[in-house]
Length: 155
Image (cartoon, rainbow, N blue to C red; front, top):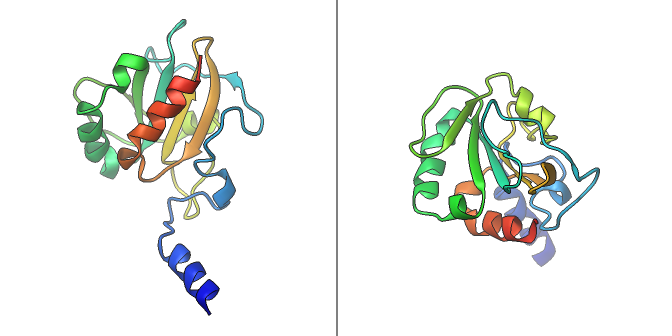
């Protein structure tokens, strides 16, 4: 009965934006699956040669929360930061890339969320332009420390 309650509690915390396979979401280690692989360019934004980069993939409704979180964080000191939005939006001090068709999310290899639609998460690129980490993370605004840890692990 206790195990059943734990399973029910875990299921209650799931979101339609989560990865259908929980093992694929926020695995916490580099080079999972077919990584590393070359990072596609983000329309004149990151990744720049010789710099680490992180590309956040968000939906327009989540953009403001991510921008607020990024404004109080030091990620931009460690890496180039870009926010890829599956629609329109603006974020002061951060490169914004519109991706209404989710083409870039697919090119970066982000998985589709459980409920479908554009991917919500991030990808980390090393100094050589290789994607080393990618994951769905619908609450990435609350996990910027984890993103920073991954960036620091990438050379």
